[in-house]
Structure formats: structure tokens, C-alpha cells
Image 1 (cartoon, one colour):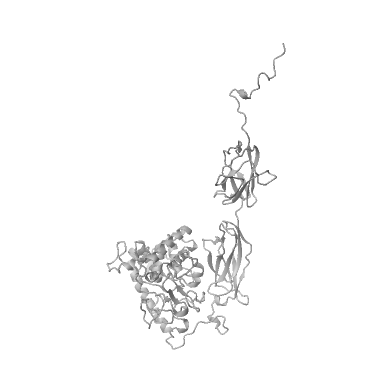
Image 2: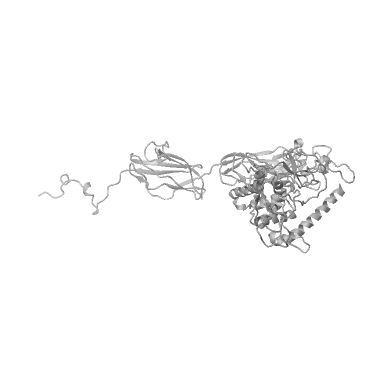
Amino acid sequence: MAAHFDRRLRKAAVTTTVAAVAVAALSASQAPNVTADAHGRQTTADKVPTSDTPSEESATGNSPYYTDLPPLDSPSPAPTIGTPASRGPSEAGIPATVLDAYKKAESALRRSKPGCNLPWQLLAAIGKVESGQARGGRVDAQGNTLGRIIGPQLDGNGFALIKDTDNGVYDGNSAYDNAVGPMQFIPSTWAWAGRDGNADGKEDPNNIYDAALSAGHYLCRNGWDLSVQADLNRAILSYNNSQDYLHTVLSWLEHYRKGTHEIPDGTGTLPVGRSDDDTDLSGPDPTPGGTGATTGPRAPGTTTPSPSPSPEKPDKPTPPDESEPPDTGTPSPGPTDPTDPETPPETETPTDTVHHLENAGTTGLTAIAGDTFDKKISTRAETKAGKAVGKVRIRFTVLGDTDATFTGGDKFAAVTTNASGVAVAPALVAGEKTGAFTVRATVVGRTVAGLDYKATVTERVADVLARTDGTALTCTPGGEFADQVEVKATHKGAAADKVAVTATLIKSVLDPTENDKGPYFKDADGKAVRTLTGLKTDAKGLLKLPKLYADNTAGTFVLRLTTAGGATLNVQLKVAEPEPSPSPSGDASPDASPSPSTEPSTEPDA
């Protein structure tokens, strides 16, 4: 095994060196901020940030990837270094359905996370590096790949060690995880990052529409703005934590930004260079039933997929029990079972020792719609004996019919437990949907019972309602009120926005029964209504009611406004005939003057 691993390292070193020299040649025209030092190593104008994303929480599990670089002659002519021959139009072209998926994902993210500034060309760059644009566009009209694209099993043998998290549902491997689909998600990441991009009601990593939208959301988490170079670098590194990967993706991003074109599905070219080696580790098909799956061209020991793969080198990942034995002749050990008492303790990871999750003191998860919950969810990972387990990844997922999210707009968060075994989720932010929902905590990479937390969102409230002016509201019988009622809602002195208000014309201050006469509103059909619901204040806490009308009943009436939170306002409405108008001289008008024959005389008697 040692000799085999040395061969892999030597091959990887050569591949990395070649890639570095190629990027150095491209840097002046194709990789923004990318330069090369005196040894041909890639650097950037700014210090490139590194990702702290563990393999099990990255998109791909830090699996190998295509290292081919873009052709030097851009789809849109631009200055280049050197004059190599073009690799043909299909090299720069993107299969039609794949390109459509990238653009639809960008459009969706522009609406849901406008501050992220995700360009579809970034998805295209990652798709190129991860799967050669779904193996040259081998997808059906709905975007489903023709056969599954499966990367190498992540068994710790030259790759990250990620034990099975999906019972082989996506990758056909019940021992370890493999990266799956055109954007190469590992199942444990897909579990929280997966999105339904084609509105068919399911989230499938083997569908390019689902995979592209999921990749977009993954890259837009943490409040990253991808128009900022540092955030862009962080996002790419979190997808696959490799500086060479970063520079390769940036090169393709710049290439596609200069222009590309649509080509028919299935006609794209498949890259050749990979970041792993080609050591033959062939094995049987991991797919249940042994049919219908193809591994990604990145799998170690596989050949580049072709219509007629060699039977001596099937393009399938190797199950752990059929791996090539080490060069020493010692049988290759199979996967260890952490529950097996014979498993040596030193082979256990902290995750293997987790027996259950405990609530670390979280209670009373309630917030008003639009507000941030003032309490955070805390979960403690424990062994069977109740000892704390540190350095374990806990995934928190928002479940149920709610628009509540964690800070940053995502419905998932992954946090590592501290030395006390406790992981604290980011703050929850209530949406506009009221009611109860669930936040579930689970252990990443371990099948133990999840721990559910109940949370509740209540409707927005106001404790004060007041009119914005004191104008008397009057009207003649059968007429309409000239002024509309406008009020402002506040809560603890601050403007209360989006507060629901109910307006009812009642019989009296002491009798809140709806009146059947007097002033009224009109519905869409022009009919009289005396109760309005569904009214809401604006961002400044203001609400202007619809116009009021009066029937032929004169008198003084009451309009009552109420909100959740206890705010109540009674508004007086007066319906009466107009007062007599005074004459210009200040006396009553002639029509209103007493008749001379009936007016008593004020002169003295003769």
C-alpha cells in the first residue's frame, strides 16, 4: 500500500506542476488577480483565503477534479499569451440543457439572494471542472444524467474518509460516500444543500437543474458576495479545498465570461487531465443491480468514460473489499465497524463514538414574525455513557411549513461541537408565516436519532395605534367622507411594520357588535361592508383605510381599529346635515329670518 500511495503522490506532484505552469501562462489574460512566481507557482495579488470547511461539509468531500485549462483563444477574441491551436468549438461550448440549468439557477438566486451576485459562468466553471459539463451534456430533456456520475469512494485511501451517510441511495455504496452527479455533491452535503431546480417535487443530485440550483445556494451561503474577490475565493475553496482547484475554476470562470456558445446535448468534449492518478483500481459496479450507473471521470483507477469502455478497466469506483492490495502483499483491510467491540479504539473518530444527542438547555423558542429569535439552539453530543464528544459536526435543519431561516437565509447550518460537546446553531430569523415548525439536529456522518426542537412564530404586534392627524371626520347622509382614516402603529415606541389591522364599524364604544347602519366601506363589487380584515401597516407603521361612505342615517358612529398585541383605537364619525351658512353681514340669511308678521315688536308703546 505504501508503494501504491507513493506512486499516487508522485503522479499528483507532476500533475500539479504542469497545471501550475499552464496557469502561469494563462494568468495575464484569463485568471483575474492570478500571477506566477519565479518558480511558476500560482499566487494572487491579494492573499488567497483558505477554507476551513472540513471534507465532510464541503460540496464534493474534496474529491479529485478535472485539471484541464481553457483554450488560450477565447470565444470572444482577446489578447492571449502564445498562439496554440484552438481545441475546437466544442471545447468552449456548453451543452444546451446544461447551459439552461446554469442560467435558470442564476435567475433564481438573483431573486432569493440578490446580495450574493452569483454569475451563471461560475456554475459553468465548476460544472466543467467537476464533471466536464455532465460528461459533455449526456442528459435527457428534463436534465437527468444518462447514467449516474459517481466519483471515487471516500475511504481515506488517498482521499478524505467519509463513511456512508445515505445507505447507498445516491452513490450505490453502503460503506463509504462518493461524490454524485454533474456538480459532484457528496450525499452528506446534498442532505442539507439539495434543492428542487425543475419543480418536479424532488431533489435529485443526478438532475442538472437540481444540482445547479443547489450549487448556487451552496456558494451563496454565509452572506458571501461573489462580486467580491475574497468572498468568491472562499466560496470556491469551500466547494473543494485546494488552491489548484481555485485557480482552475477561476480560469474557466474568466474564459466563460469572455463568451461561450450553446452546443447540442451530448456533443461536448470530456476533459482528460485529473487531479488524481490513473492507477488501476477497477472494481464492480456499485449501483444496486449493477446497471445504469457510470462513475465520474475523476474516479481513481478509471478510464475516461467513452461509448465503449474497456472491459479490463471498467469505469466503476472500487468497493472497499475489492481494492488493489498493497504492494507489500498484506491483505487490504475492509471498512471497520465502530460498533464492533473488536474495532481498535485508535481507529475510531470522535463521530464514531457519538451515541445520542441531548438538548443543551434550549427552551422557549418563540419570536414575532420578522424578528430574530432571542435564544439560540444548543445541542450536546454524548457517548453512550454520557460523556461529551468534541470535534463532531452537528447539522441543524429547519423543517415544516415555514419561511424561518438561520441568519444568512439558509435553512441549514453545520457547527462543530466544542470541548464540552456542545454545538450552538446560528440565530434563527422568523419569516412572515406564523405557526409552529421544527429544527432538527443530526450528526454528520453518523446514523443516530435526530433531536427535534419546536419553535413558534407569532404574528406581528403593536401596542399603540394613533391617527396621524386630528381632522374631524364628517359626512352628509348618503354622501362620502372627504378624508380617509390614516393611523400609525408602534410597538414599544418603534414603528410596527406589517402589523395586521382589523377595522370594524361598531354600534357603540360599549357595544362592539358590527353596526348594520350608518357609515360603511365598499367591497370590490361596490357593496357595503362594515368590517375589513387583512389590512397591514407599511414599513413605517402607517396604514390608510379605504374611503368611507354614509347611508341616509344621521348620527354619531364609531370605527374601531384593533391589532394583535392589544392596540385599539376608536375613531368618531359624524353623519349630519350641514349647518346653516351665515349671511355676508353676519345675520342669518333671509330664508332663515323670522317673518315680520310673526316677529315681536321691540319698539316702545306710543
